[in-house]
Image (cartoon, rainbow, N blue to C red; front, side, top):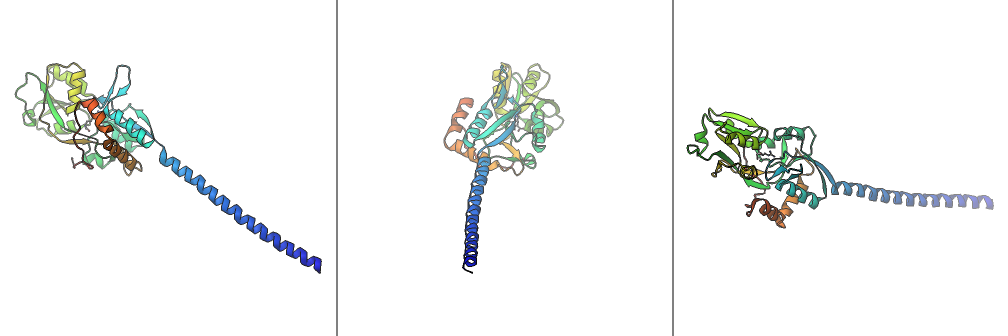
Length: 281
Ligand code: ARG
């Protein structure tokens, strides 16, 4: 009887011990899993890999050097954002400007950094970051051209534009205008110089720079801008990365990295940027 009692007691004791060990094991496992899961989510928050579509025909925002390297203001801003937010960036330069939004929608690229004007029409398809540049469209003519002063004077004229740009849309709305579309604005400027077209409509800073680096004398930019536009970085609709891109842009503006890059490329002080671009069709 005594013996039996003892063994029952031991059994109970063992069971208890087993239970206790079980609990400890469970707690340890839960803690371990928690730590493991935490570190996985933290990691994915820290490092993003983004393939960014760039059409390097838009100096000084994105342009190809003779050695084929792509440089420009947009590239420097992108690099600064990448450093700020631990983003690993791959540049995809195979697409023409008018193909970029479609490629973003198809998931072939993860973002667009191409001096892209924020418009409500584009915003139906993409998510724009906060504006990172303010400028506008300008008309360019040959030096000797004196009659063309504004879009009104462009009726029934031949106007060159870059395909898919805001300049192209502006030209489409000019009555009777014949439009020549080019994949790069440098080609359009040569046509203008050669007298094959009457005017070019394109973003003011890009024209200014293209004329300078292309040694295109004999051309004149009409400095009264046709529009006020803001450039943004485009991400897919409802992108989970939009906040990080905006935070990074905000930080670069606040710590003056933005101003430094701006004055390096444009030799002037940047204009203050709104947090949200005014609606532009
Ligand atoms: N800002 C203009 C637009 O959005 C022209 C941009 C052209 N950019 C380029 N990388 N080719 O329509």
